[in-house]
Length: 123
Image (tube, rainbow, N blue to C red; front, side, top):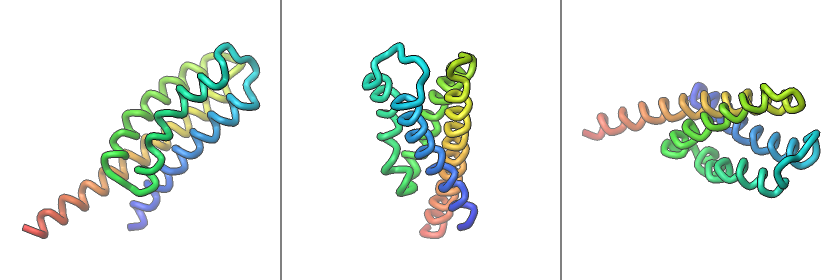
């Protein structure tokens, strides 16, 4: 039970950290803005908002979706990390998306094993 809480905390922390960091960077801290703020916030936050409720409730399908979506944010983090004015943004995006990936992966694994054990016990 404690291990599951650790992974869920990592997943929730990565998701909320990613959301708040994207809002903070694109809303106030960005050195240069090439795309309208509303468009960049919409494109970067829409997939994360889709995940919030399921991750907070610990649902397996949402954890699987979070694994796939976090891979996109890892790629975006690398993209920003190689650009000198936005390196901090890229590095923190990489850290939050990696924690979302690891937390969601292990949460899905632990919950899947528990569901399998429950099905076997019911038979």
